[in-house]
Image (cartoon, rainbow, N blue to C red; front, side):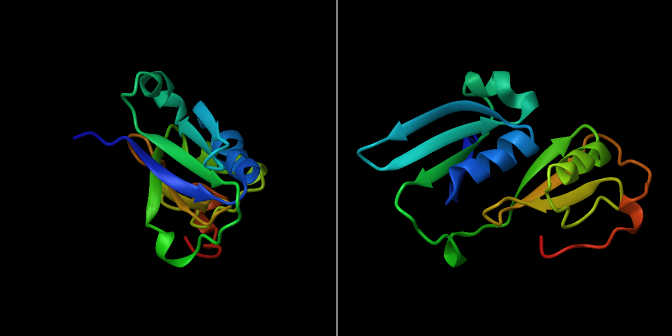
Length: 146
């Protein structure tokens, strides 16, 4: 058994790509539009996983956009997605600059949480050893839920 992907239903494909691709830095590995089924699938990989993902050897995020509007609240939610990052502070600063709220700042130099436009929690974890606490993160309060 091998982990393949996590599917996230999105109601606005452009907002979702703005978050996952443009702000988080993931890369689109493949995309398909199905007119008969009235949906679009976009598969993305983290930058360090792109080559492996193209060979179907790395997990992906599958964004499913149903062309007919649906409400994706309640029972379709789940815990969170988690990604390891090279520099937790630089990643959070880049996301913040892109207009993304840092819901749980990396006060400990190790972990932060943000949310996608669809309200999916994304955990960011420092690769290797945690960083020493650093401002403005060390004293930044939580914002919203994560």
